[in-house]
Length: 377
Ligand SMILES: Cc1cc2nc3c(=O)[nH]c(=O)nc-3n(C[C@H](O)[C@H](O)[C@H](O)COP(=O)(O)OP(=O)(O)OC[C@H]3O[C@@H](n4cnc5c(N)ncnc54)[C@H](O)[C@@H]3O)c2cc1C
Image: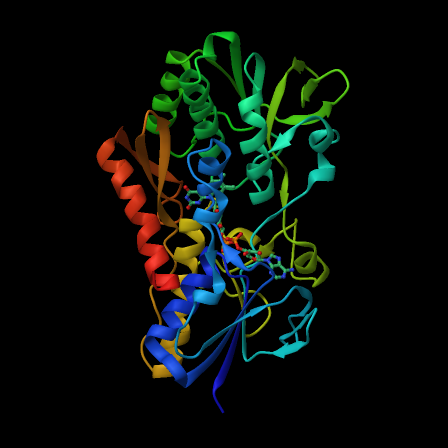
């Protein structure tokens, strides 16, 4: 009997794990990869779509292009997970696993911020970014607010990038002088583990006359009066609100009983959950690292290496190190880089790479290399 590995979610974590298992074990194992969507879109592509730098169709990577030995992709919606028995129910059937990997990411809790959808625009979902690509060309004057509605949130630098790219977008259209930009974030600095990165971002905000409000969360919007209410009760009027919704684990994961404080606890060195044979990787977990694709991918690599070692009788991999590189759009086509290390020392550390054209090329390579590896492009 072949080992049945069932991977829930074909995002950064699920795609990397599936690819590594297929490369090393091929048809010797049976990997079932399940996702409700028909295609993958990189998180950062949402910003490109929103600001009209590309189209959604150009950014979609269809799962039907996955042809890997030992792997089958199923487009199904997961409706229940039984982690004790390692049985998964979907809208199309039931799947039994010898090894179950939960890589279902983080969902958005729109109800947690009253008025967000009626009075504002979220840009963290594919649909939200697409809607904004149609709305932004109609905004030519007034107060724009980029606001985060709760922490933790995916890709901590992404809201900072949004404020800077909005500046570029309005400047290119010749209307920046008629607009104000404010940026609200519930962190003390834009990228807390890297003071150099935070300093560079804060300097970029100041140079561009972007008002930066750290340490504050948007708690509600008044859609009639166009006012954002912050967690200290202060109010900020807006004509355009671009919001990052509060995050939470998908309902199906919460209902499975695997979560504590909203996410799945794991042993951060092995990504094992408290259920034997059940692993969890990426944004759905509390692994002690930020919610970002590079960390989901790194965690998935450790789980895959462990499964391969078990199948081949080799040595177990080194513990997950919580390291990752994130690229940061500074505008004008230049990209900076922060390299962070969350788990190897007593506290997280990070180093900053100055924005440059060379790093913009590195970021493009990052995307191309994943498209090639995961989708055979
Ligand atoms: C604007 C923006 C910019 C970003 N920029 C970066 C960046 O530059 N670098 C970076 O590393 N990260 C970036 N990120 C973050 C990154 O996209 C996520 O952290 C990453 O995708 C998480 O990977 P994951 O595998 O944990 O989950 P995901 O990639 O979210 O995958 C989870 C999958 O589970 C599926 N799923 C969920 N529920 C169900 C269900 N019930 N049934 C079936 N399938 C289901 C979903 O369809 C999804 O495909 C950005 C995010 C945003 C929003």
